[in-house]
Length: 220
Picture (spheres, rainbow, N blue to C red):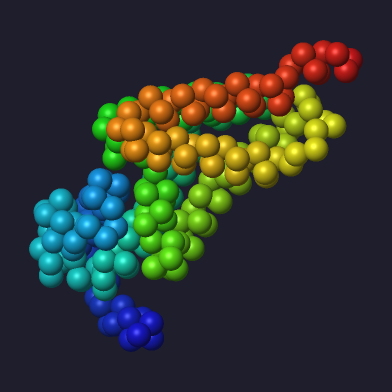
Protein backbone atom coordinates (compact mmCIF):
# COMPACT_ATOMS: atom_id res chain seq x y z
CA UNK A 1 0.00 0.00 0.00
CA UNK A 2 2.78 2.43 0.88
CA UNK A 3 4.55 1.69 -2.39
CA UNK A 4 1.32 2.25 -4.34
CA UNK A 5 0.78 5.60 -2.63
CA UNK A 6 4.34 6.66 -3.34
CA UNK A 7 3.93 5.72 -7.00
CA UNK A 8 0.66 7.61 -7.23
CA UNK A 9 2.27 10.66 -5.67
CA UNK A 10 5.07 10.57 -8.24
CA UNK A 11 2.52 10.50 -11.07
CA UNK A 12 0.70 13.57 -9.80
CA UNK A 13 1.46 16.80 -11.66
CA UNK A 14 3.48 19.45 -9.89
CA UNK A 15 1.34 21.76 -7.78
CA UNK A 16 0.40 25.04 -9.41
CA UNK A 17 0.06 28.23 -7.33
CA UNK A 18 -3.71 27.79 -7.52
CA UNK A 19 -3.46 24.14 -6.54
CA UNK A 20 -1.13 24.96 -3.68
CA UNK A 21 -3.70 27.47 -2.46
CA UNK A 22 -6.39 24.80 -2.23
CA UNK A 23 -4.01 22.50 -0.38
CA UNK A 24 -3.22 25.27 2.09
CA UNK A 25 -6.93 25.90 2.64
CA UNK A 26 -7.47 22.24 3.49
CA UNK A 27 -4.60 22.29 5.96
CA UNK A 28 -5.76 25.52 7.58
CA UNK A 29 -9.28 24.09 7.86
CA UNK A 30 -7.95 20.82 9.27
CA UNK A 31 -6.34 22.63 12.21
CA UNK A 32 -9.75 23.88 13.27
CA UNK A 33 -11.94 20.94 12.29
CA UNK A 34 -9.78 18.27 13.93
CA UNK A 35 -9.54 20.31 17.13
CA UNK A 36 -13.29 20.85 17.12
CA UNK A 37 -14.63 17.43 16.14
CA UNK A 38 -11.72 15.07 16.78
CA UNK A 39 -10.14 12.73 14.27
CA UNK A 40 -12.76 9.97 14.09
CA UNK A 41 -15.78 12.24 13.83
CA UNK A 42 -14.18 14.41 11.15
CA UNK A 43 -14.99 13.33 7.61
CA UNK A 44 -13.37 14.26 4.34
CA UNK A 45 -16.62 16.07 3.52
CA UNK A 46 -16.13 18.16 6.67
CA UNK A 47 -12.64 19.13 5.60
CA UNK A 48 -13.76 19.95 2.06
CA UNK A 49 -16.67 22.06 3.30
CA UNK A 50 -14.52 23.98 5.77
CA UNK A 51 -11.87 24.60 3.11
CA UNK A 52 -14.37 25.32 0.30
CA UNK A 53 -12.78 22.76 -1.99
CA UNK A 54 -14.20 19.83 -3.92
CA UNK A 55 -13.49 16.20 -3.10
CA UNK A 56 -11.60 15.99 -6.36
CA UNK A 57 -9.34 18.80 -5.19
CA UNK A 58 -8.89 17.11 -1.81
CA UNK A 59 -7.83 13.80 -3.35
CA UNK A 60 -5.53 15.61 -5.75
CA UNK A 61 -3.47 16.55 -2.70
CA UNK A 62 -4.16 13.78 -0.16
CA UNK A 63 -4.70 10.04 -0.52
CA UNK A 64 -6.81 9.77 2.64
CA UNK A 65 -7.98 11.50 5.79
CA UNK A 66 -4.93 10.12 7.59
CA UNK A 67 -2.63 11.61 4.95
CA UNK A 68 -4.36 14.96 5.40
CA UNK A 69 -3.96 14.67 9.19
CA UNK A 70 -0.25 13.96 8.82
CA UNK A 71 0.13 16.99 6.58
CA UNK A 72 -1.90 19.04 9.07
CA UNK A 73 0.49 18.01 11.85
CA UNK A 74 3.44 19.20 9.78
CA UNK A 75 1.56 22.41 8.99
CA UNK A 76 0.82 22.91 12.69
CA UNK A 77 4.48 22.38 13.60
CA UNK A 78 5.59 24.88 11.00
CA UNK A 79 2.99 27.49 11.94
CA UNK A 80 3.44 27.26 15.69
CA UNK A 81 7.20 26.96 15.32
CA UNK A 82 7.27 30.31 13.57
CA UNK A 83 4.94 31.79 16.19
CA UNK A 84 7.20 30.79 19.07
CA UNK A 85 10.42 31.63 17.25
CA UNK A 86 9.23 35.23 16.89
CA UNK A 87 7.58 35.54 20.32
CA UNK A 88 8.64 38.43 22.60
CA UNK A 89 10.05 36.16 25.31
CA UNK A 90 12.84 35.14 22.92
CA UNK A 91 14.42 38.59 23.30
CA UNK A 92 14.81 38.40 27.09
CA UNK A 93 18.44 37.94 28.11
CA UNK A 94 18.04 36.38 31.56
CA UNK A 95 17.14 32.70 31.03
CA UNK A 96 14.95 32.45 34.15
CA UNK A 97 12.94 35.51 33.13
CA UNK A 98 12.79 34.19 29.56
CA UNK A 99 11.35 30.86 30.71
CA UNK A 100 8.73 32.53 32.90
CA UNK A 101 7.87 34.87 30.02
CA UNK A 102 7.38 31.80 27.82
CA UNK A 103 4.66 30.67 30.22
CA UNK A 104 3.12 34.15 30.16
CA UNK A 105 3.06 33.87 26.38
CA UNK A 106 1.35 30.47 26.59
CA UNK A 107 -1.25 31.98 28.91
CA UNK A 108 -1.83 34.85 26.48
CA UNK A 109 -2.63 32.29 23.77
CA UNK A 110 -5.50 30.89 25.86
CA UNK A 111 -8.26 32.96 24.31
CA UNK A 112 -11.37 32.33 22.27
CA UNK A 113 -13.24 29.05 22.09
CA UNK A 114 -11.63 25.81 23.25
CA UNK A 115 -10.72 24.55 19.75
CA UNK A 116 -9.00 27.85 19.04
CA UNK A 117 -6.31 27.53 21.72
CA UNK A 118 -5.98 23.82 22.47
CA UNK A 119 -3.20 21.82 20.85
CA UNK A 120 -3.81 19.91 17.63
CA UNK A 121 -1.16 17.34 18.52
CA UNK A 122 -2.57 16.68 21.98
CA UNK A 123 -6.09 16.45 20.59
CA UNK A 124 -5.17 13.97 17.86
CA UNK A 125 -2.89 11.74 19.92
CA UNK A 126 -5.42 11.20 22.70
CA UNK A 127 -7.76 9.65 20.16
CA UNK A 128 -5.37 7.91 17.78
CA UNK A 129 -2.42 6.68 19.88
CA UNK A 130 -3.56 3.04 19.73
CA UNK A 131 -5.31 2.97 16.38
CA UNK A 132 -3.09 5.09 14.12
CA UNK A 133 0.58 4.61 15.04
CA UNK A 134 1.75 6.91 12.25
CA UNK A 135 -0.29 9.79 13.65
CA UNK A 136 0.81 8.92 17.19
CA UNK A 137 4.45 9.05 16.18
CA UNK A 138 4.04 12.34 14.34
CA UNK A 139 2.24 13.96 17.27
CA UNK A 140 4.86 12.68 19.71
CA UNK A 141 7.67 13.99 17.55
CA UNK A 142 6.02 17.40 17.30
CA UNK A 143 5.51 17.73 21.05
CA UNK A 144 9.06 16.55 21.71
CA UNK A 145 10.49 19.01 19.19
CA UNK A 146 8.75 21.91 20.88
CA UNK A 147 9.96 20.74 24.30
CA UNK A 148 13.51 20.70 22.95
CA UNK A 149 13.27 24.39 22.02
CA UNK A 150 13.07 25.13 25.76
CA UNK A 151 16.03 22.99 26.82
CA UNK A 152 18.80 25.58 26.16
CA UNK A 153 16.92 28.23 28.13
CA UNK A 154 16.23 25.86 31.01
CA UNK A 155 19.82 24.62 31.04
CA UNK A 156 21.14 28.19 31.19
CA UNK A 157 18.70 29.09 33.97
CA UNK A 158 19.62 25.95 35.92
CA UNK A 159 23.32 26.71 35.67
CA UNK A 160 22.75 30.25 36.91
CA UNK A 161 20.08 29.71 39.57
CA UNK A 162 20.09 26.03 40.59
CA UNK A 163 23.41 24.43 39.58
CA UNK A 164 23.16 21.73 42.26
CA UNK A 165 19.61 20.65 41.38
CA UNK A 166 19.12 16.97 40.62
CA UNK A 167 16.68 17.42 37.75
CA UNK A 168 17.64 17.86 34.10
CA UNK A 169 16.70 20.62 31.69
CA UNK A 170 15.10 18.10 29.35
CA UNK A 171 12.96 16.58 32.12
CA UNK A 172 11.62 20.02 33.06
CA UNK A 173 10.96 20.85 29.41
CA UNK A 174 8.80 17.74 29.11
CA UNK A 175 7.12 18.43 32.46
CA UNK A 176 6.09 21.82 31.10
CA UNK A 177 4.45 20.11 28.13
CA UNK A 178 2.75 17.63 30.45
CA UNK A 179 1.15 20.43 32.46
CA UNK A 180 0.14 22.39 29.36
CA UNK A 181 -1.47 19.38 27.69
CA UNK A 182 -3.17 18.41 30.95
CA UNK A 183 -4.50 21.92 31.31
CA UNK A 184 -6.03 21.71 27.84
CA UNK A 185 -7.68 18.38 28.71
CA UNK A 186 -9.15 19.81 31.91
CA UNK A 187 -10.35 22.91 30.07
CA UNK A 188 -12.23 20.62 27.69
CA UNK A 189 -13.54 18.40 30.49
CA UNK A 190 -14.85 21.36 32.48
CA UNK A 191 -15.65 23.49 29.42
CA UNK A 192 -13.71 26.26 31.12
CA UNK A 193 -10.53 27.91 29.75
CA UNK A 194 -9.63 28.98 33.28
CA UNK A 195 -8.54 25.42 34.00
CA UNK A 196 -5.72 25.83 31.48
CA UNK A 197 -4.83 29.26 32.84
CA UNK A 198 -4.74 27.97 36.43
CA UNK A 199 -2.47 25.10 35.34
CA UNK A 200 -0.06 27.56 33.72
CA UNK A 201 -0.07 29.83 36.76
CA UNK A 202 0.72 26.96 39.14
CA UNK A 203 3.44 25.80 36.77
CA UNK A 204 4.93 29.27 36.72
CA UNK A 205 5.06 29.38 40.52
CA UNK A 206 6.68 25.93 40.59
CA UNK A 207 9.39 26.93 38.13
CA UNK A 208 10.00 30.21 39.94
CA UNK A 209 10.73 28.18 43.10
CA UNK A 210 12.92 25.68 41.26
CA UNK A 211 14.95 28.57 39.88
CA UNK A 212 14.71 30.85 42.90
CA UNK A 213 16.70 34.05 42.46
CA UNK A 214 17.17 34.10 46.25
CA UNK A 215 19.14 30.86 46.02
CA UNK A 216 21.54 32.59 43.65
CA UNK A 217 22.03 35.55 46.00
CA UNK A 218 22.74 33.23 48.95
CA UNK A 219 25.37 31.33 46.99
CA UNK A 220 27.38 34.46 46.30
